[in-house]
Length: 270
Image 1 (cartoon, one colour):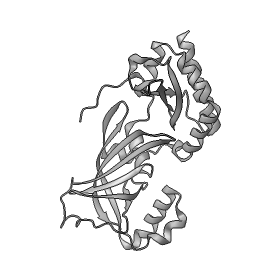
Image 2 (cartoon, rainbow, N blue to C red):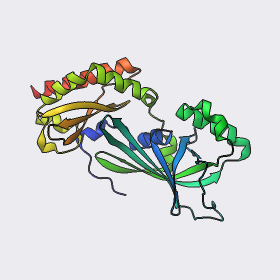
Image 3 (cartoon, one colour):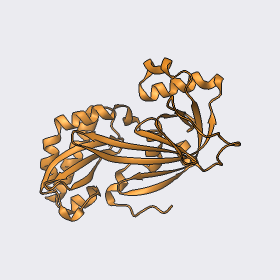
Image 4 (cartoon, rainbow, N blue to C red):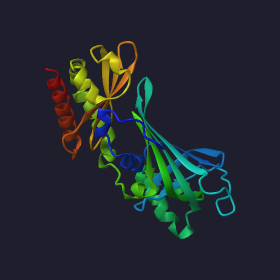
């Protein structure tokens, strides 16, 4: 697969392998597809070796696995990660993981289930998972879709990638940004000139500018920056990226680094 051209703002994104590994580690909504069969409601996680662990719904009827069943290359985990807003759902990343599936051996089920419970903070649900089908997948390759491009990640890069550490407390960081910086973000982004906008824009109608922004909503945070959804007065949307000068260690760092990136963008306009 050939990646689409990168925008200047895309250089402030996490590497595609890190995004893919972070999403596979438990975020987003997953669907498992095997030779035309599809199952929603799949609980997913990723172990330290980069193998994907999957807990199927109680009513799932999966085709036989190789060597009896479908050939390799027909098993795909599709994970969609979105930001839920009061009146909309904003897509953030879509990851497709091609897998070679196997049943988790009985002796390894307890550890695999504990991994999933840890990934999803669902330790209280462990008892209810007994008897459900538990699979493990060796990653063959991955497609990572996110604004503004799609990239391919090979198995070695996926296995070597370390999930984004900010993911564990991203929700708290976003809440703080929306409370502490929302008005400042809106005012600052409205004042950004064309040069600053071109460096921040991930996706959307670049020719529109930001002067008529009606709202600015932080929708994602990671170790490299904050992604802001700019809503224009007529409903059009811009995905904007505010890059961090360093990796945040906590929520307070995220607020400070986002404010600094905004101030630098405004200063570049002056």
